[in-house]
Length: 438
Picture (cartoon, rainbow, N blue to C red):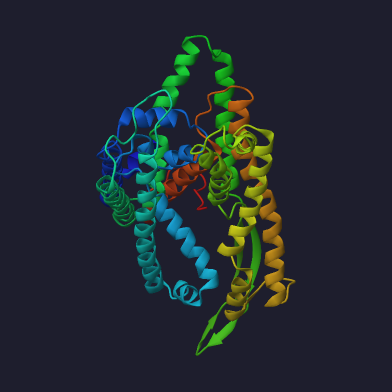
């Protein structure tokens, strides 16, 4: 492993790419501490401390703490992710987008352009909503409003500031993807989550030092965390390989085909999309309830208590939504009919299965079975932190969604570095075996 890191310094291009990535991420972290004009930081911090476990906490996690500080990058990269997901869903129902998706590089650039426009539109809408919401917020016990001087001037300034911050982040992510190493958007989310790790570790040591938690118990939790990371790595690399045989065919004077290969189906095809969507939907009532009076709407407060993290009803609904979105997103992301048609077009077939419709049905049946186990895996990873926090009172600061993102992005980035090193005839990080892409 040490020799693998030493080989990185021997490849000038790879070294420049890694250095450029670190510089861009440093710029992002600096931007997270530049405040938006017209907001009282102390009152805003009091507001967030009273609303842990709501939709604000989820968005704050993906923004790297920028939303809690209401910095110029408070919206984070979430508008871009939302626009990407919306366009991917629209690809199924809009023939023009489906045609662009099949046109290769040219179509991909056009879809990326549409995604940028969608990001700006969503940023303007969310920025205006945040500006209006901040004007109407006054945390109990503080006395001071979050926005001392509201009005259309503040709203317009906030919309422009937050939209510019998200657009800059989007550009930053694209620059990292093109000139750095790894996927830029994923690395920005990764950096935002990991940036909170030192404070979490420091708080844990404070609890141990003040005898609020025993050192032995924290060692057990640490061992459990390592085991969970190992399970995530193992399952994310897991594939169900369907054997595919290509028949020999003669084109001109040359003979093509005749080789055996396989069709890899990932156990967790949907990735981290299901827990993100599930958390957003369940936390929405709690977020709405924060703006309503408990005296006027007691029934809503009762519902919110059932939908609070750690409650049995919350966990059951959370798991149900994860299962639903695992199957839903997999069905959109992977089309067995297109895969079977492409195999048939190039003379490929699954041994023992007729090409065409029968092959599509077989692939769909296999994908349905492995998606079931993938949904169980995602549900277990996401529910485990809530059991530790709310049932065992363990300061497990990284939720399941954050853990999936951190480990997944780390594996993908390591795989890209490994590919650069192997391309230039250097050994990778592992002398035996290799790091397989997800």
